Amino acid sequence: MAGISLGKKIRGLLSRKGALDEAFYDELEDTLIESDLGARTAMDLVDSLRDSKEARGMGESEILDYLKRQLLPYTKAAKLDFRDKKRALILVLGVNGVGKTTTIAKMARYFHDAQGKSCVLAAGDTFRAAAIDQLLVHGERLGVRVVHQQPGADPGAVIYDALESAVSRGEELVLADTAGRMHNKANLIRELQKIHKIVGAKIGTENYCKLLVIDTTTGQNALRQAELFHEAVGVDALVMAKYDSAAKGGIIIPIQRTLSIPVAFVGTGEGYGDLALFDSESYLDSLLGIG
Ligand SMILES: Nc1nc2c(ncn2[C@@H]2O[C@H](COP(=O)(O)OP(=O)(O)OP(=O)(O)O)[C@@H](O)[C@H]2O)c(=O)[nH]1
Image (cartoon, rainbow, N blue to C red; front, side, top):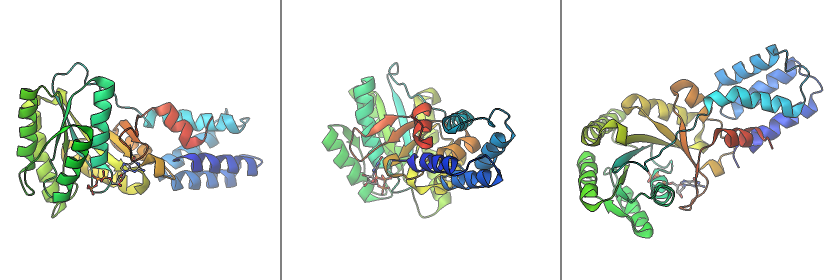
């Protein structure tokens, strides 16, 4: 499980080192960087611990609590509540292989069960035939309609169709897949911006959420992906997919520090039920090995 290794490492450090000396601070900084928290956060955390009068007399649990308090501002949760909305759309972004399609399927289950929403899936990744097929398989298993066209079709048109047909069928929430890769980055960005314009004009920004799925196991790559998608269309919230397989799991902290994007969900396995609402407290407890 993600985070346990950081908590264990810090506990190991604290029990090995008798005092909070420079060697301890250096090792702590390295440990934090290794856990994907980013050099800036690691340095700031260590500096604040070093400069804190309060920290001097602290035991192991108090130091872990201190680190948790420092990190809380960078672990904000996004609340996606569509209960009062008759129509809404989640545009799901992310590079190939991060867990996008699986997350869409999990969310269809979640929003149905937890918020009473009837969902429809839009196969907006028309760049890869396999992405359309994969969504169709999920749709069939879940009993959820999938709006799709042939590979190479205009993704904006697929998503627009999904929105139109959802209204006439009384489906309230559209979950739209998008391409994670195209011939080049500029194409991908242009395509996403086109979709963004179409959706915004059709249902209004208040009914529309751009959700970026990151693979928690990929560390700093996820930060670069977040920067790319955020610059292209503005990301409203993150999903940390594959959190269950991540040995580190600190990557959302540098993402929030840099881009202030809150986290909506955490992927905890491959099943449709393996999606948890992100909660700052329990995330930090798991990351730091508290409790
Ligand atoms: N353990 C674990 N595996 C996950 C999770 N989410 C997705 N996966 C697995 O990750 C792999 C890739 O997931 P996909 O949903 O196909 O990813 P994608 O981003 O749609 O990938 P492409 O279709 O290749 O673009 C699959 O084997 C999923 O079962 C998760 O939260 N935990």
